[in-house]
Amino acid sequence: MRTLYHLALSPQSRLIRLVLGEKRMEVHLRAEPVWERRDEFLAINPAGEVPVLVEDDGSTIAGSQAIAEYLEECDDTIPLLPGTIADRAEIRRLVSWFDRKFDREVTDLLVGEKVMKRFLGIGEPSSSAIRAGHANLQIHLAYIAWLAERRTWLAGDKFSLADLAAAAHLSCVDYLGDVPWDHAPEAKEWYARVKSRPAFRSLLADAVPGLRPVGHYADLDF
Amino acid sequence: MRTLYHLALSPQSRLIRLVLGEKRMEVHLRAEPVWERRDEFLAINPAGEVPVLVEDDGSTIAGSQAIAEYLEECDDTIPLLPGTIADRAEIRRLVSWFDRKFDREVTDLLVGEKVMKRFLGIGEPSSSAIRAGHANLQIHLAYIAWLAERRTWLAGDKFSLADLAAAAHLSCVDYLGDVPWDHAPEAKEWYARVKSRPAFRSLLADAVPGLRPVGHYADLDF
Image (cartoon, rainbow over all chains, first blue to last red):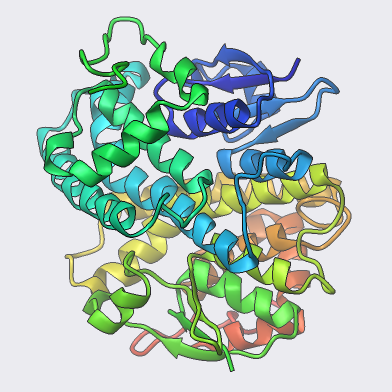
């Protein structure tokens, strides 16, 4: 069976777990303590980052973007980049939005400061970074709400990788209880729909040692 | 004719200019002063970032990754993601390497500090950031040299988007004269081959107002 090197609160890893789940592909999950910089892991991915997918034949694919496109090319019977060339471009625009912009402006400032800094042993959380993360999150939630009001799913009529990328990031922030859902009901309604998909179950069962999720984290009716 | 909103020293914009050049697709270049946050531009791309491609029919594609995949899907007679599914995964891994890792560890710390901070009006360059950028660049050059020693092009036997992504970033840093080419002859030899491609010419003619490129910047025999 294929193996995914991952971390529970890495949104890029969560994205790939969701892709595999949606495509009903089995995977063996292996948590990789990237902060230990194990030689064996660096040989697989010199970037030293998760996710990394290792296929049965030993071939490895590193990075969420490369893995997501790879899995889509391997099997698109359940497509996550559906539609025309232009539809696919809009999906990819939003995937980048979440994996670059949301990552830098929200995830890094909240999950990065509160969780990863501790694991990496690089000091105390910065309260100004956390404040900025909360402020940026309000703007991002408003954008998600704006999209969700106008479209069935974030990128258009069809469920896609864009919904999974957004939900992967939000689910990490939500684990910490940092998403003010009541400020953005349309975003909450969209997230509830993604969260109730079977592929999401494994994420909701995650438990990071020493860090319990907020009470509503696994609640589908939050 | 299609229009590309770009900035001369944005590596993501340069990547798309190179893709268009390699595919022999004509484009009208329009420099977008993203720091002005023009309403008209934010309506096209709410992320407020370049590159953005606008097609003749008015459709827009935002973000280098989405645009590169889009252009490949529009016309792959000159493929930039050539080979098998696994080959394409390796190309995309390296594109992410440069667009995320190199960007964060080198481009942001050198071009970001020395150039973009001035345009954005957000203070003086940080000398510690610049020192870190130089140190990280040595490691990245060694990795490029390592790849170039073992492969014809960075991702394998065939020229690909990975070479363009790497060269797009390096060319911005090289504009500032910050690449210690003599420390990594294999990387230099690879870069000389990319730099001599016709698609590169428009990049070598770039001139940022108030910031002249280093002497060897446009020299093919540097």
